[in-house]
Length: 221
Ligand code: PGA
Image 1 (cartoon, rainbow, N blue to C red):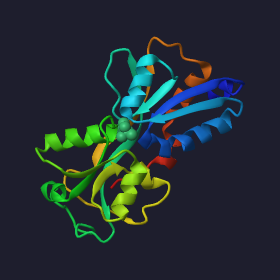
Image 2 (cartoon, helix red, strand yellow):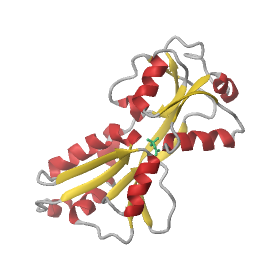
Image 3 (cartoon, rainbow, N blue to C red):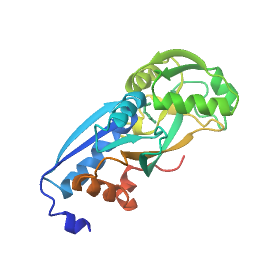
């Protein structure tokens, strides 16, 4: 099927991704474009709320979420795990400890993503589930800025491991906290009512070939 699709010449793939997906989607699309060199790509990046808005308006072929909004007309393809991992500055007292109780981690000053973020949504739901309240010290709109604030010693956080998979973990310690990481998944979401273009269909088929995604996966924590 893929070989047949190689005849695919031109076309635009419109894809909108949440901020945490921007670290690996370019690598995936890069490989995909080697198979289909003549397609062009329009990539948008925003937080969950912004991408959910694009999804509702049907602006893209696909949106990438780890917490897709639930609507009957949204067709979801799960394609990659997404783990939200606890981090601290390298010299932090929790760094290197085993099985840190969630309550103890929660007492450390916490750097939280902005309202509308899927990362925040997942963290809040997870903490509610364990009846645990975080000591939120700052609200910060960017994964990079949170990582650098952590490196600067301003507190701890929980971020998708994709945030440092490309670009390194220098300056941060990954913490071993009970009930963490939060295990979620990535989904390609599309509107059931919107026709699937040949390029979009080719991408859908591409991500469903498990072996292609291996390079994007990190070893189990
Ligand atoms: P966000 O993305 O935190 O940038 O909104 C992550 C997600 O939706 O899971």
